[in-house]
Length: 435
Ligand SMILES: [Zn+2]
Image 1 (tube, rainbow, N blue to C red):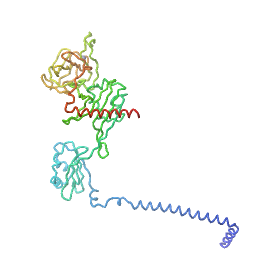
Image 2 (tube, rainbow, N blue to C red):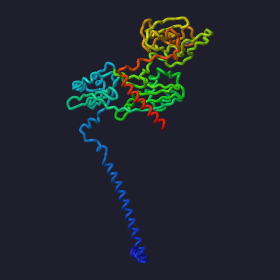
Image 3 (cartoon, rainbow, N blue to C red):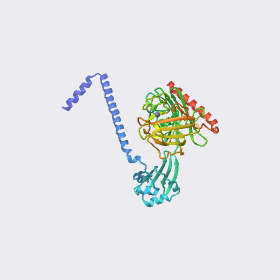
């Protein structure tokens, strides 16, 4: 049977011309080649798998004798509380007393003696309840470190390197200073600084209009490539109803940083624009107003700020209390004399602050009383008057005197700084305009 088949095959082949036989051979070789090739593929896959099995997790780990110990350590954090000492905190974290003594007796342990309330202590503890390492975090860039040695601890202060980057933003207000700022990625703290800097000139509750804009350069502080802090505003420009305000930060020779106009005027005023935060004005200064209760033309010689009963009222400037008592339609009234020329009055108060007594010196922003409706008043509000040389002035429009300008010894270097940073701001504005 087999013989018959073989004979048949031989016959078939011999019947084919030589050329066919040649094709067949090439074909067979090709198939053999293909199968070899795919085998190789398969082989390489196998070897990859082998490789993966070889690089097992334990082979990636260092063959360090300390490793086992480290494997069982745990990091614990504790906030330093009132009456805490290094000893009491470590004891709380479960550290062996003997080990605490060894830490306290190590060189430089005095660096850990003045730990402050509210700061954090990070402690790495091993399975024997010993401190392996310790980090007293003073702030995002500095602190004190302790590391276990064969004998005692190595304790040292450290200071991480910081990098500062300048950020420029230009924002046009369509909604509010705050919302538009946040939308453009301006950090909350920077917006607050901006409000503080320009708050002396601009009433952010009442004066802002759509189309007002501001641009600024501020710093971001990084440690190891990680943003740690939104730093200070270096320069800011605010355009409020076509009026331009510029404030430049400058570190004075006495080490204090303040904001000045490009000409060196202090952005701070000797008076706050408004004695009540978060209020709205119900009645402006108007010399021809019909009085809401008396129904006759009676000049309104102040500004009415509507706020709920009990809202704190701030002194708008430094001065001395010259009146704090009832006074007819004013109800409970406070008068503060600031200079020979300036005085302010606060009326309809619900009550006085206990410290508000005649002859008492008052600082700007001190709470002197609380909003109410004593005297002739339809509802809770503060009636605020500003007097210059004994005459009424409109508190909303009166030109408020500036705080001390830049001093003579700082002026020259300030001028150079102001010129440079102002041109930086203009360049950024120009670039952002062209994008
Ligand atoms: Zn009034």
